[in-house]
Image (cartoon, rainbow, N blue to C red):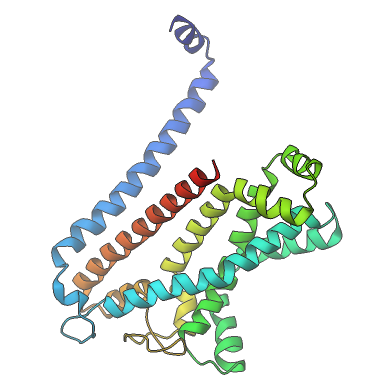
Length: 283
C-alpha cells in the first residue's frame, strides 16, 4: 500500500492531467449513454400496451409485431450471408496470402473504403442491382444482401485482427505435430480467435438492427407479416422512423424504441452466453 501511495505522489502534473482527462472522458460517455437509455425508457414504457403486439397491424393498434418478426429474419439471414464470406476472406488474408503482397493491400484498401461509404449509397446500389437489375423488387432478400455488403468490411477487419493476435507459436506447434494448414486454421487458430470474431458479429448485429436509410430503398416500408423472402416489410428501426416522421404516433414510436433496445440487449447477452459456452467447451 505504501508503494502505491509513493507512486501516486511521484506522478508529474502532466500525468495527473492525462489521468483526469481519461476518467472524465469515460464518465461523460457513461453519463450520455445512461441519459439516452433512461430518456427512451421513461418516454416509452408507459405506452407499451398489449395492442402493440397484435399479429396484424392496423391504424388503431400500430402493432410492432410484424416489424419485430422482420427484424429477426433480417438479422439471421444477413449474418448467414456475411459471416462466412467475411471470415473466409480474413483467413485468406492472414493465413494464406503472402504478407505485404499487392493483392492483400488492394483487398484491405477496398474493405476500408467500403467501411466509410454512407449507408444511403449502399441503399441506392441495392435498389439498382438487387431490386431492379436482378428483378427481386423491394424485398427482404434484397435488404439482407445489401446489409450483408455493408457489414462485410466490419467482419473482415475484426476477424483479421483476431487472427493476427494469435501467437505464431500456436501455428508452429500444430505444424510440428503434423497437422496441415487447413486443419491448423480450423482446429487451432479459429477457436482461439473466437472472442474477437464474436465481438465483430455483435457489432454487425447492432448495425443491422439500427439501419434505416439503406432499407428504405431495398425493403420498402410496408408494415405486414412477411410471407416470403420476396415480400416487402419493415424493420423495427424503420417502424420507429416512420411513426416519428408521421408525427401522429410519437408515443408508439418511443414504445417501439424501448422494445428495440430490449432486442439489442437480448441479442448481445445471448451472443456473450454462446461465446462463454463455446470457450468452456474448448477448455
